[in-house]
Image (cartoon, rainbow, N blue to C red):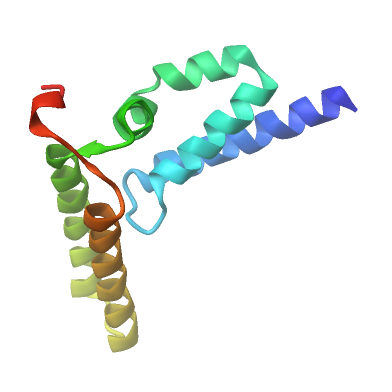
Length: 129
C-alpha cells in the first residue's frame, strides 16, 4: 500500500510538473498551481524528486519567490502580464468567434485583478535584482 501511494504521488507530481511547464508558455494553463501541486506530491513521495523540483528554473521563477516572501515583485508581475497579454492577444486576434474573444478578454481582466489585488506586491527595497 505504501509503495502504491508513493507511485501515485510521483505520477501526479510529474504530470502536474509537465502541465506547469506547458502553462509557462500557454496562458490558458496556470503554471504556479501545477508547480505547487508537484512540490506537494514530491515532498510526500520522494526527497530526491523534491530536491530536483526545487532546482528547476520553472520552480525558481514561479514558485520560490512567492513561497519565500508570500509576495511577488512588481517587475515579475509586469513580466507575467506582458507574456500573458501577448499570447492571449494573439489568440484574440486570430479567433473568429466573438464569444471566444469575449471569454479571453474576461480571462485577461480576471488574471490582472487577481495578480494586482489578491497577490501582495513585494516592496521595492526587498526585491532581488
